[in-house]
Image (cartoon, rainbow, N blue to C red; front, top):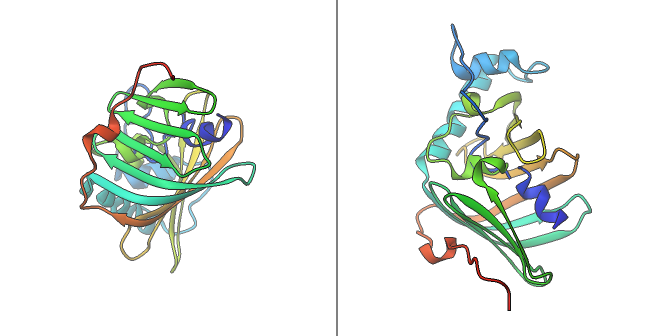
Length: 226
């Protein structure tokens, strides 16, 4: 289960859309949300503030324009173990990681809860979506600078990277690094460092933003394992 924790204890803020903070959203005055958030971040961004703000706006636009996603993923855990499979997303709040064998995990979000099932151990753990680091992937509308603390923005010819901090994840504060294509602003990869310091990297491939997943994929089975 430790391997999942590195995705989920991202509360898994990962993805659902950059991190829903507990309590009221941060109030920003006198500047755009992106610029103000960067100004409050620990350490300067590696690009001028306007460029950073533009990068965040483009990332927000990509997240908010796409309600569904089907794609392949490769995950590398803190122990270097590699897993792969297919990711299904239907906003708001629905997600499923289908791991290829020999992995025995299933991760399912039904709009309210996230279930982590281990077929080998015959266990199932439930979490609130807001406690997971993949909130940025699941929220209907995301504003990265408002919904999370932006620590750094770095733009190069090969990638745009946004580093955020989420204090609402299960177990404490997680950091999430989102990597986007600099031309299309499409999400390519994310890395989650959970409150215990374990790092999980997930890369996306063959992403289809038009295909609608089967709704049955997002149903959590509450029955006991046979």
